[in-house]
Image (cartoon, rainbow, N blue to C red; front, side, top):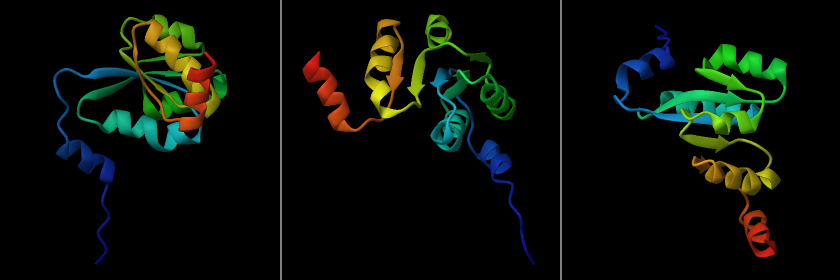
Length: 127
């Protein structure tokens, strides 16, 4: 006998969302965001995938239909201006992480990004 599990349904039954959720905006809709960031943000007990920002309109429309954020943006500055966005995940190419993170911090947002240490260090030393 073969048993098929619906892991998404099972996950929703096991993980109870907290009353207060951190509203996350994800910048970028590429493969890493699609395979990791969107699902992790939706499934975490204390976060909400509030916004997705992607310049490519057709890609933005496709991922919005799948992941159902509250809002979508094509411009990063517009997402940063949204007072409901509390934190930003930068799912972009490594060389853009530091300047985009600085923009997020200047806008009063928390930011989460992964970058090679040398890229971040070089940016800090040069500046």
